[in-house]
Image 1: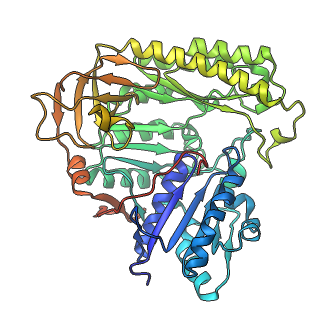
Image 2 (image 1 turned 90 degrees about the vertical axis):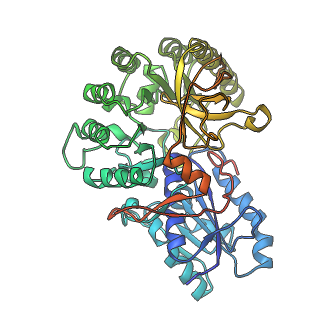
Image 3 (image 1 turned 45 degrees about the vertical axis):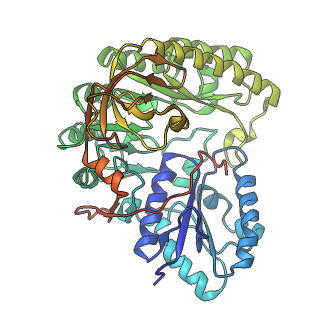
Length: 494
């Protein structure tokens, strides 16, 4: 139907969007499109947007403006906008950028191929925004971006009402997949050589609420532990209010669940947490970390923190710094609060001046980096197992290093040398080495490798193959050769 037409997907925002883009790519290829190479002029450009990051709207419309000359020069080219910003702005997109052909929302990513054909046939823009989920994304085919690590959604949507967050209104109420479907997808990926999966949800530890099973998430972690060949299991993100001891026990007792926890704090001030409608307090948050470290002493704990929430005082901010000092995060994603239209926080009084927020933000980042650097220095001399990564070390070429992720999620730049090296080290292989230096955001291992294990994932990376899954009625994924993909940027940093 669309044989030979080249597509390009530009993804912005969270891991959910990254995984949704894999589903979009899978559908397009099933409809006959092929990935555009780095030097190709695409026949179709799809924007999978985020509404959470600052200036998301301006960045999208600016980029659409830059595409207009290409569209004018090639009227057959199509432009589609989906994701959270499309769900929010709806018909406003084609009013501001009438050269856009298709607008689709977060609840109907499966409609894209049909909408593209309809827009082409009718020679006018097609806008379809559903208010609730049409089909669970996992029922759609997916072109996976990694041969060694895969995203697996366990739920979509969110039942929380945080005042700063627009996600529930754009993604809807939480919908949970059945455990058997999740495990079938994991097993199919592992059957093709994938070594690591990350279980995805807006609030993974509330998984099971929809079908009334309170310990469903801990059972799911343990079930993943029984899958032969699955070497690493990660998950993101849990919510402190719903985090229970059975999950900590499952993490500690399931060998392939990684010693890593991303636990969003948002603020260390109990007063601000109330204003945010975060249903926990700082003592509860810290008690969770204490329990995790008691069971998993080497766990690396990361977090999210918002600075400058409306009405935040210096005393509130100091409370956040106090929690950061006590929590000793291995890293933190820090954000300056900015208004999001449609959120309750946008209407709160006492919005803080930019210079106040910036000054507090700078102090927070300095403290986070100081603690992370101190924690990383403690790891010098320690042996680490690394899953060799692709494209994570920006300076690898000039330093003659490669990069990989330790089991605790830390990024390690290493030297791929020594008598243990079997042929060549490839992304997807597994190596062991010793840390020689700790920096705030990474570790360095400059000695010879202790071990090197070649894997099927490494074979597939070397051959240019990526898994392509067919959806929930899985069977086994098939492989297809990918063309070079455009670099994606976090948030809406186009």
